Image 1: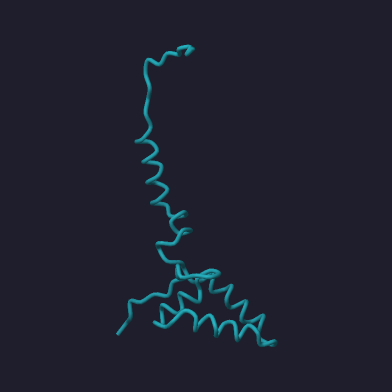
Image 2: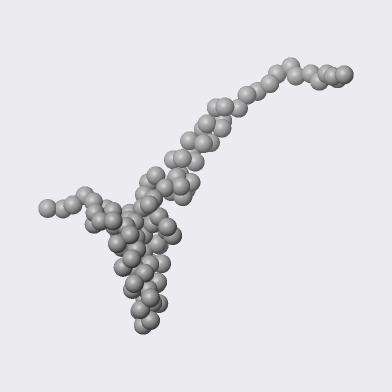
Length: 101
């Protein structure tokens, strides 16, 4: 049986939402994942490995649909703003200047 659950970076974020997204996927508290990450990052011989895995997760795991950056870079959102800009533009006719004293 296939699960329809997908791993996403969470809006419950401190740095980039990776730990929050992993915690949401497994249904646990994000602070547990953050604590495990910090403990592993402090171990001297695997610090570089853990930090590089975290950076790879930032790049590879997509963010939630409602996050700020995904809303900025959505093509549909840009098309909507262009349409809105075009429709809200007003054309003025017979405009004359007057001196106000």
